[in-house]
Length: 294
Image (tube, rainbow, N blue to C red; front, side):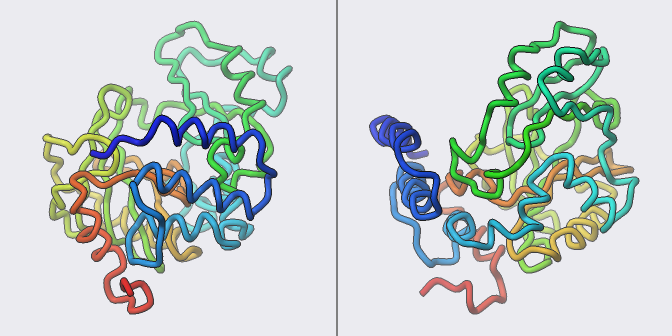
């Protein structure tokens, strides 16, 4: 896998601080990020990362439904309305100020994360000390500033507290890439919090012998028993968007929708192996003449 340039990383960090927060500079910085991640400039071809880059740098990413479903609290209303309460991760608390965070007594067993960023989480499994300064720091974090994903730009900082999904320390994590309301590619993550590996499957559960960013999994996952119901729910949620990823949890009997991801991997996650990019993207955009590579 190609290693990003440390020099370009430093240039990018510098430019984040000095360039205006405008859509013009969002595009320039996103182009630099893409170049550093993939070793090439983005284009019009039918590749997942190119399509995500085009979405990220277009006005579509600012549509109200894209912005609303980027918020980890507000997305629950969207999920509830489209597929029902039973598939929404329960909420224990939403903390809307630093004082509320300081005063809150966190449950001995809970998941703590900001609603306005991506990838930040604390798993409190059995009454361990809570890193309150870290949580307070999240309230000052602007995810847009770091990655220029404009759907996060105006989100109000909050902290959401949830139970462990299915009360399990580790849960199966299935992400469904949908295009034009149809489930196309499944990403399955193994051991998310302890040595993450990843596998891609077709919607018929055929392994694609490929991964994104993380090592390709050597484990094999049997097709979940509720696979069809999960894909149906993913498509109902995805019907509001063109290209989107629906992030779900399952215990083979029930499933919950955790998040809706609009710019998966910030359009910078390389395929493993590299030649998987073309064949996986061909499945994602199959049947769409407008998405074909010029």
